[in-house]
Image (cartoon, rainbow, N blue to C red; front, top):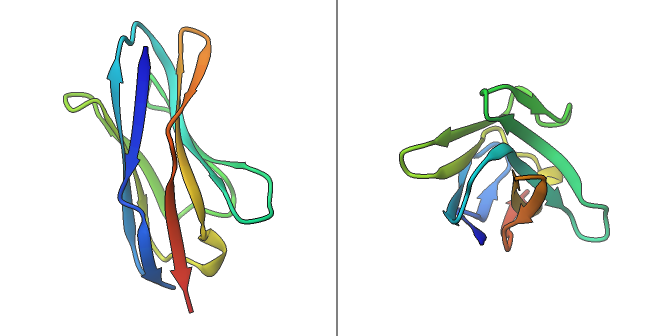
Length: 115
């Protein structure tokens, strides 16, 4: 079994920064990719960023240059550093991991950007 638990969400002012964490646990044989989705109220869930096992990254155009995805293998933790936050970034952020062909989801963490 694979469990993903996000943390680090909260309320920040526009222009501020926030770092999300995703702790992975359980039986993980092979991870092909990890990443972050987000879903704003009344909108479809969208892919924000991904990182492969080889370290290649991709970002949605709307966050490129502001967000950075990274991982700490020793801690089995995924991170999302969010800078220059905008009101449009307000959403529930979900951690995902592709393990042996199956996609696993975290429970989500709320990010609210004010002003």
